[in-house]
Length: 383
Ligand SMILES: Cc1ncc(COP(=O)(O)O)c(C=O)c1O
Image (tube, rainbow, N blue to C red; front, top):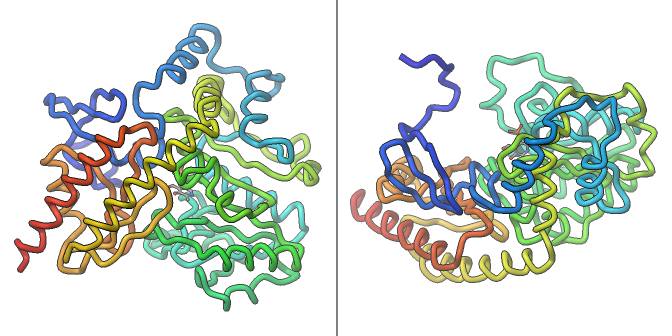
């Protein structure tokens, strides 16, 4: 009998150790990891610089309140937000999106939020209300009012952005929603509509950010210039950290007392984040691009040709393999686990792959070979 709520429908695998991109369970079984702890441990499980930073910080001090200035916080904010934005630190993606919603409403003095079907922004009331997935909202009404949903990638959604709109929130690639790529021209049109309406463009980079797509932020692929960016997951490489980044010209919105959280910007998490950001260099990102190019070659030439596969989407090392309805993604995941590969699912029978960005091409190929084997036999079995 378990002592925890069954909110996750967990696999019977108790992971007790990790090294680089390998995980070991309590029975000594090892796995190649194509999950990164759901897009979190982008630098793997034993990155020296991150580990050293956290250990060193742990011997000094773990927590002070946000009532005191901190050079570490300033350093991480500078590395993360760049010269034109300021950071507000919190603990998770949902909190970063809560902050963004509050920021948009307070900055504009308007209340309407525009978001998109199929999106995922988190589980707290504001972020859940912005989320375009009905299943996660069942039983929780009433939600936060004045949230309007448009169709992702559809021009009809642009007319929803009007002079009542405080903010528009979107993922450049919808992650939980099935790894759906935003169309570059549509993303630009959303930005233009925001500018015309005086609404803030909020880009949720919780899953796409911190190098996952080969850029620090996925919006950089399309030269977008969002007013607000939200980050979490990969920024702490496994320690809890989130951030809302907002343009400096809106600094007055978040003045003293307007937003806060006790643990936001915890020193251990920030020490990890500093290690992450110091290594997220142009040459590191170029390496991610190179690996992604060979992964996409394999995906296009081999996996996309399998009868079990309908299509493949994604960007960089954020990949969605859309399976034919005759193959159940959960069966595929279980079979891959038995072979020693951990993978994820997303909406619409999608096999989602988020390998650590530091994984070698050799091991990326090894994982893809296992996926090919399982998908080949999946259709033979059902035929
Ligand atoms: C795009 C996106 N936004 C927000 C969240 C919520 O983040 P968290 O689980 O840290 O609250 C997630 C989590 O999967 C996400 O993928």
